Each structure stands twice: as C-alpha cells, then as structure tokens.
Amino acid sequence: QVQLVESGGGLVQTGGSLRLSCAFSGRTFSSYNMAWFRQAPGKERDFVASHYPRDRTPYYADSVKGRFTISRDNAKNTVDLQMNRLKPEDTAVYYCAAGVPGPSGYDYWGQGTQVTVSS
Image (cartoon, rainbow, N blue to C red; front, side):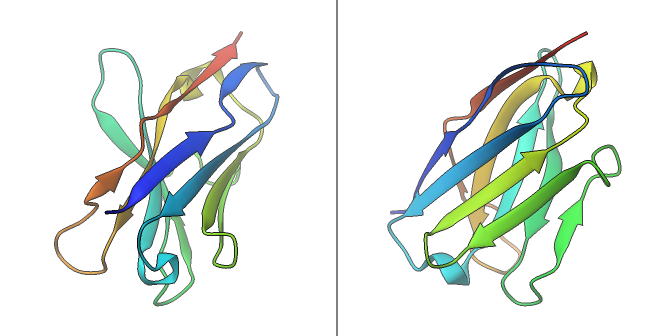
C-alpha cells in the first residue's frame, strides 16, 4: 500500500514562505501522479498543484500560480511544495495525494499538515 507522510507546516506571517514535503513509500514513486490539495475550515478540499510523470509538467490552481512551486525527486521519493508570498487565505490543512495515471484520480492521501498565515 502507498503511504504518504507530509511535513513542513507551521505558522508564518503574511508574505513569508514555507516548504512542505511529502514522503512516498510502498510502490514505485516515479509511476504516480502526485498532487497537493488544501482544505480551509468550513470549506471543501481544493486542488493546489500537481505533477504528472508522463509529461513532467506542473499544474497549479489560479490562486497559487506564480507563488507556489511543486517539485518531485524520484530518487528520494518525495514531492515538495514551495510556498512563497503567503497570504492569510492560504491558511488550510495541506494534503499530499497520489494516484495511478488514469480516470480514478487520487487514491492515496496523507494525514495533512497545518499551514497558518497570520495577517
């Protein structure tokens, strides 16, 4: 079974930066689509960024484009999310997700890590 463990969340002031990391284990990491989602209190879980092995192209939600960068290291089995110029509206629990390429989407989720941006 795939296991995902996030780390790197915390409290930061507006305009600051944080780097989240997700450690993948249990299967061949390089075969999986990887993504970050987030869920703010009282809201649905939203897509943040993804990275697919087939085209190695990152995709971003409009709300984070230009501020966040997703990267994967197939040697270390990790996917990171560098978050710059953070805003209070970025406050959420951030989740790492993994899925086999295809219509099933993301089948595996981490436990989440809290990111809080103070104004």
